Structure formats: structure tokens, C-alpha cells
Amino acid sequence: MVAIIGGVKKCEREYIELLKKDNIKCKVFNTMCPDFKKKIEACETCVVFVNVVSHKLVKSCNEICKKKNIKLLYLKTNGVNALKENIEFLK
Image (cartoon, rainbow, N blue to C red; front, side, top):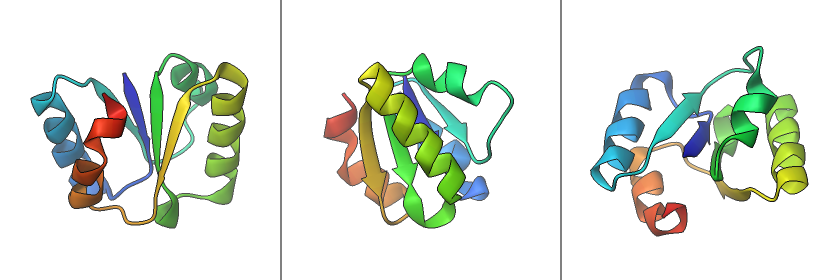
């Protein structure tokens, strides 16, 4: 499963549908939720849209990924095309 951190709220459905086409399950987190750390630890890969996420969220995601040896992908743009270009990394 892939965790998408950040992104545009209106594009959540597009992110999910894009990854579903390649049989990749994903979960989108726009804000810090109560069990954020536990949910991220269950993922194989994290995608972080750095231009729309708080520093606190990026920092905690980075710490979890290093500790649990989870693949981490930083994307500067938050569009669906940026995710589409890096879909091979997610497989």
C-alpha cells in the first residue's frame, strides 16, 4: 500500500484512481490524523507532496520511514502528472 501525504484535496479521487489502474492500493493524508504514525508504518511506500504539506508532517513522515525502512518519494509538484511520472517507483 502507498501513503500519499499532502496533495490537493480536490485531486484525492484522481490520485486514488490513477494508482488503482496499476493495482496499487493507496491512502491519502492531507492532515495529521490521530493514528498517523501507525497508518504510515503499515505502508510500503510514502509519497510526499512537499509544497503543500506542513514541516511537522514531513518531518514525522521522514522519521517513520527511516525507522521502519519504508521507501520515500518527495515530489515538488502536487499534480496528478507528477504522480503518473513516478508510478514505476511505487510498484
